[in-house]
Length: 185
Image (cartoon, rainbow, N blue to C red; front, side, top):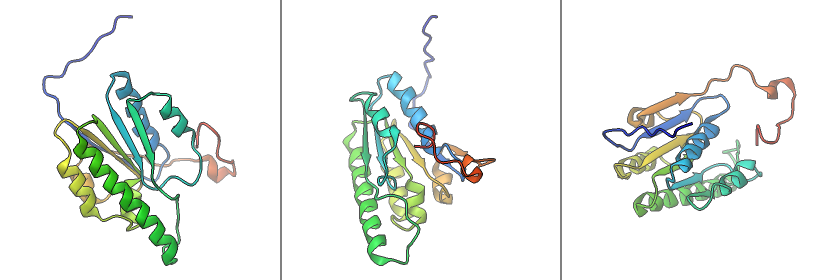
């Protein structure tokens, strides 16, 4: 099979959003990362919420080599915003992730920056929507920015070039089937 490269006339950095209540938002972002790695593009992934349980994606990303780096910044998923100490811990970690994202954007070293679960961080008030808008606004013209997580804010959707909503039709969780290694984590 002959390698064919499509050469676009005009290159531009896109803002992609993977959102919705269905499974596959991070997986879609990582599929894009895999494709980019095939073109020797430099990628940085920052996870905003995940971090309290192991996921195979971490070691899988490491196998892509030095062109793809991952930073697991979150303290894990949480639902109790009424506990101030837990909330403040999560907020502090999310603010660290935002600072790291800005640093990576301004470094000029990356073709793609993935901000995994950033929409959830906004929705949980761990970061402010204005912080995300600033990241979109300061992104270099050729950098692609991928934002994942449920409930993407309307201002993010408005600024995005591509928005995909994952819709749950059926999930094994509702059939009392435990999460499966390699599929769910």
